[in-house]
Amino acid sequence: MNRALRTLLVVACTTGAVLSSLTVAASQDGTSRTPASAKPLDGMRILVSNDDSMQAAKASNADGLGLYELRKALCDAGADVVVMAPWQVQSGKGTAVTNGGTLTLAKRIQLPAGYENDCSGTPSGSPVYGICLSAVPCGPDSASATPSDTVKFALRTGLAAKAGWQDGPDLVVTGINSGPNVSAQVNDSGTVGAAIAAIDQGVPAVALSSSGDASQMRFPVANYRAHARFAAGFVAGLRARDLFTDRFALKVDYPDVSAGQRAKAPTWTKVGHGQVVWHAYEAKSGGDQDSYDIAMGLCPGRPGDPCTETVPDADSTALLERGHITVAPITADRTYGVRTDGGRELRRIEQYVTRYAPRS
Image 1: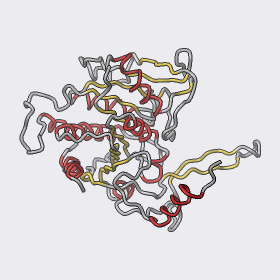
Image 2: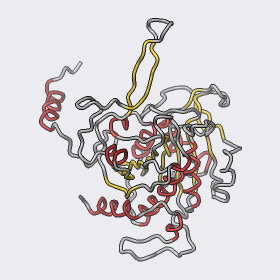
Image 3: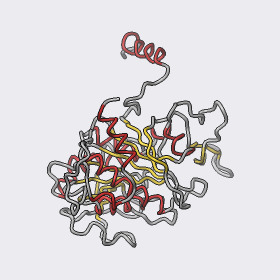
Image 4: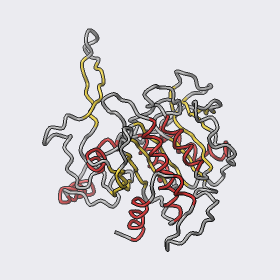
C-alpha cells in the first residue's frame, strides 16, 4: 500500500462527523496551517449531483433530501457548492448517458422547508438545478437526464454557463443516496455512475450513500445529516493532506444511526461481489400474459446463491453486518487496487479475445 493510500486510511479513521472539528486543517506533518477562524473548505468549488433527483418531495425521503443535507454541510464548511442533478429519480441508471435530444435546466427557486437559508453568500449563490430531457421547460412529467448526463453536462458546459466556473470544480460529490450502494449493486448505482463520469473527465470525486429502513423503504433525515457532517470532515481531511485524485473515485457508505447508535469507525474495504438487492419479475395478474411487474427487495441470501458474499473485506459485510462507515476506491471496472480471484481464467479469456475471437 502506497503512502497516499495509507494516509487516506488515517484520514478516514480520524475525521469524524462533527463540524466543530473542522475549524483547523492539519497538514501532513500534523501542524496547523489554517487559522482557527477559517473554514476548512474555504475557496473550494464543489459540484453536487445524485441519482435521486432534486425534488425532495416524498415522505420516504427517497427523492433527493440527502442532497440538501450534503449541500448544507459543505457550505457550512466553507465550500462554494453548485447542484446539477437529475430532474426525476434515476436510481439504478448506473453510468447510462443520453445520446440525443435536448437538455433543459430548471433552477429551483423555493428550496425544501428548513433549507431555505443554506449556502447564503457563496460566490456562485449555490444554485440548485434539475436537468430534464426536454426542449421545453421541465414539467412534472418531463423525462430526466441521467446522473452521468448531469455531471458531463456540468463539467463540459453547465458550470461555465451558469456559475462562471470556467476551469471547472475542484471536486464532484454525488449523493447522499437513499440506501447503501455496496457489492454487486454498485454496477447499477447512478450515484457511483455520476462519480465515475467525473473521474473520466479528470475531476476527483466522492460518492456518498446512506442506509435506511430497507423493509419500509424509508430514509431517516438523521442518517443523511450524520453522513453529510462526516462527509464534510472527510473531504476537508483529504484536502488538507493533498489527497484528491482522479485516478479513482472514493465510495463512502454510511450505516443506519437513526435509533441513536453511533457509526463505527471508517474502514477500508473492497467492493463485494454478492447481491444485496434482488430484482424479481412477476407475471402481471389479470393482464397481458406478456407483462411482468418489477419487484425489488433484499436478496434471499441462501448459501451458495448469488446473494452470498465471497470477497474478503467486502463493503457490504463491514457496513451492513458490522455497522462501519465504509470507504472503497473505485473505477469504471470496480477493481482499483484489488487483486481479483480467478486470475488463470481471466488470463485465458483475455488471450482468447486478443488472439482468437472473431473479428467481424
